[in-house]
Length: 212
Image 1 (cartoon, rainbow, N blue to C red):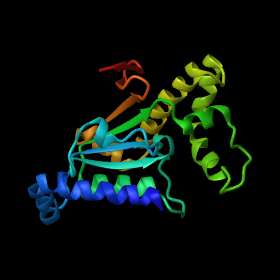
Image 2 (cartoon, rainbow, N blue to C red):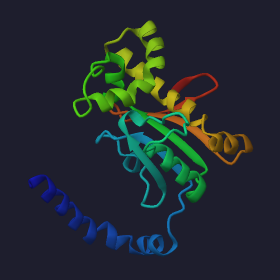
Image 3 (cartoon, helix red, strand yellow):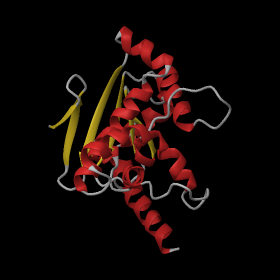
Image 4 (cartoon, rainbow, N blue to C red):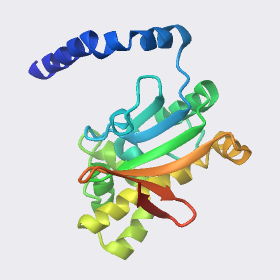
């Protein structure tokens, strides 16, 4: 398929370029393993690559990506808890010192949470997405009250609210709360606006995001 052929072409460029230029780094990562001090929880959106936005090299950040950069609340019920497993690995094995929740503009997941367009659909046809973004239902109520359920202003408010929801859910994990209180871990909220390339950082004291 031509799409996969494009990946192979990219691999060849990487192999002859960046890999060769950073061979010492890759050899070290292979022999010593990974030890990034920062975890980024970001969206799966193809336009928002944390490594590119923060201009970091391989081995520098531990990344988890999913629809709308969401973190589910702590729970011990049976199931496949992908984000929770990655969080546990980052904290207990890799021992990251900071976690950044990175939201972004034009997020399809946040827009779907706002419009509720996928509610009632079957799994495989939107149902999985609807169930996942239902984590934003409570935050949505406040957004709709202040901004309505459509338009750029409402969508941006929903995107920013999503970052705060994930931060709040992170703090439901006992290990996160314990490490944050002891000073071993710092949580941060950030937002990248695709339209202008600006990175905004959350001031949790005020609840406001401000561009860098």
